[in-house]
Figure 1: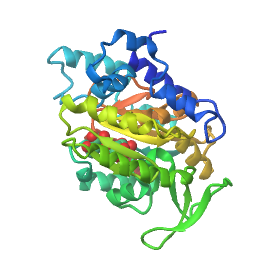
Figure 2: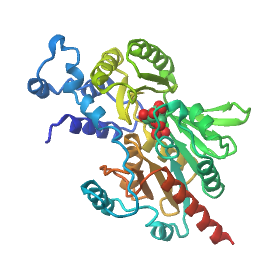
Figure 3: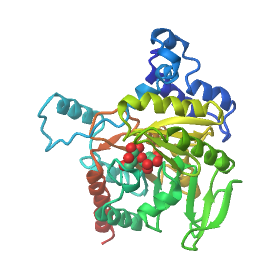
Length: 381
Ligand SMILES: O=P(O)(O)OC[C@H]1O[C@H](O[C@H]2O[C@H](CO)[C@@H](O)[C@H](O)[C@H]2O)[C@H](O)[C@@H](O)[C@@H]1O
């Protein structure tokens, strides 16, 4: 087996997303320790020790490699013509992940007599990636495209952000929302809950409407609040660091941190997590995501939403999931393994993915959503 640090992170991702039927993983401590890289003694022999040993852990466990490879700079390719080697690489990558726009006829052929269900990630999919997470707004056109799509197809947003925050950013009441990477699910109460789950509760949203909540990690709220406060404290002297509290997970952003300080921010997060064996770390786009060690992810959220809406029969339903991030891979995997619908990766650079198709950027996402609406409107004329 290739034992590069990056590979090890991927192996751990797979371990967590597979198998176990119960929500809480069998041995969270062991899993978290292996996530944190305690078993990778082979690398510590290869990597020279730094004086004081302060950043050795994150060098040896692959966090730094993962941070360096996260969110490569966007490349704007004008027209479908290769102008340099990287364009050629991109065009050959597109052979493996064809454009969802160019495959549109194929998608609607598959949708014949099926109900399309749309799942959308938020950051990098509906809003372009920007330096300040508090300013990641959707364009007016994108909001209108999402609103139109939701008029014809059940539509859910599945985000790493808190449910409340993503609802505030999107502002459409007709959607389903799943925050904190799918562990905070909110349905309008009028939509049938066809499955009975012990963690499902009735509540009222900020507008006073009845909603149904599915929050399998409620017991983690105090722990997340505590770790959030600690992370704010330990990163406060690192210029550009930003910590967000998403209720069921917390994010440490390093997009605006000088790269020479990445080992320091990573090591501090690592040191904090040593005291929290029931929390785990995943990597997003220039962000370290701290999440509960429960067997739940965006893929599980997709399955749960389909079941809840009575739409899990793959013969009658065509789910389409559009996302750009590593956490979206769990959802792409569910669709690919179930041979059920389409995962569509949003990327302007070549990336390995479990998605079947691709879109270059948020503008293409909007065009794709609009194409679905036009097609549906033609059908019902
Ligand atoms: O699942 P998502 O909806 O894609 O959310 C994932 C994370 O998105 C946000 O961070 C990312 O977008 C920011 C705004 O463009 C960008 O500044 C940051 O570097 C990206 O990582 C959000 O702030 C995170 O909390 C989410 O976990």
